[in-house]
Image 1 (cartoon, rainbow, N blue to C red):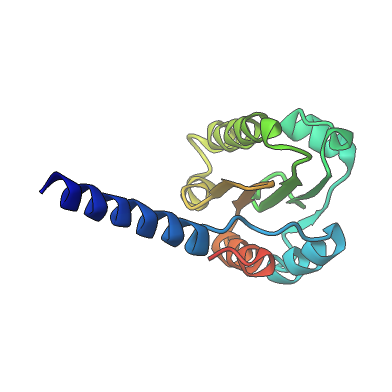
Image 2 (image 1 turned 135 degrees about the horizontal axis):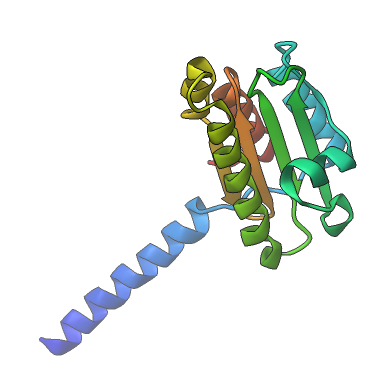
Length: 158
């Protein structure tokens, strides 16, 4: 009886491992230019513009040179919250730092619009922070979910 239970539990563990290997894929690493084109097309609502490495440092406290690459689109107007950040990490140890920077940026934006920017606060409620594999991303704005979907499709995340 114990032998049968042992065989059954071994098969269950093996099946779980096979499922994990087949279906728990991490996003593939994509060249910066490909993601820039994808993001620009998905977020092309005229409310954001490509930012510089100085803007990345100012808004997130991150140094672009520390990462494989960083893509940042920031709001054109101070009254807008449309923003896209995609950071391709050099290694997994950087993930938590970048994720915390994105979370801090989201909280800062919420505080900035608290009390008078009700439309912006509602928009920020649907912001997306994603940290998986070699990427950490932050998507905010009216097209945040569409931009995130385009990103996922580009890096083939299931």
